[in-house]
Image (tube, rainbow, N blue to C red; front, side, top):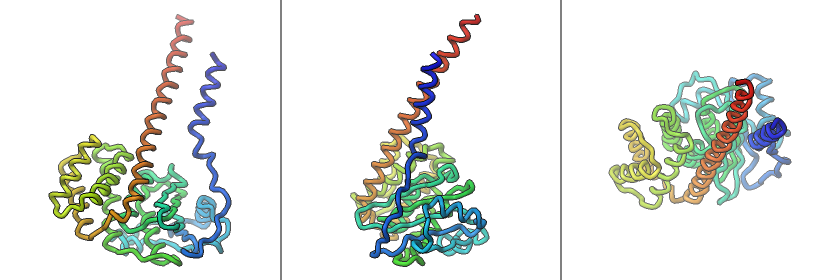
Length: 299
């Protein structure tokens, strides 16, 4: 029995350590079409923290990246935030060929407490960012919202970057704030929030709604199909948000292939999460039976 328990513990450890075993691999060659990758550091990082972030983002040669710093004033510039805010989360943006998709990688997921990969991806697609690999890291625990500002600045100032529309970046930030609030206030699973936003955008790309009522119907249909219940206030915020996007003429049809990839990623993540819960339940059941057996020996 003890040997079996040891084996089970080993399987459990390997199953949950697979991400940590993944490697970034060798440095990629420089893509001359898009310039150097851009690395954006939070202004409040200490010298030692900045060096830690360099290692986390696999920056082994600073001559092969374009390094910039994001400050509190950038929050005010890009998303009308507090210019006195402290910035810690950092990002590395590597632009890719059309069709690659938007790939988000949280290097320190334990320190990004509220924002999922899919929430980042949805907000960035709204802002106009696509076909890029975005690595995000923070040496301290943060909500994750400010990392977006650094990415926006990278597109404005990074070599080979394309300046983003400020109205779109502000709406993208509203989207991210609403997404995290839905998870906190309405108790909706964060992956389901990502699925909801993605599915709404995909349906908008298909239906091309002409009125706010059309937007509301799409949202209500998706809430029903995903079995998500929102407060009347949050439902209205969702309708207002996507109506703003409609007035900005954001064409999600151009990003449909990336939305499809994103949807597939979320569904796979939900399946994996369910699988992990089943695995953990089996582990719990085994040890409960084991302890019950031990107790019976002394009763």
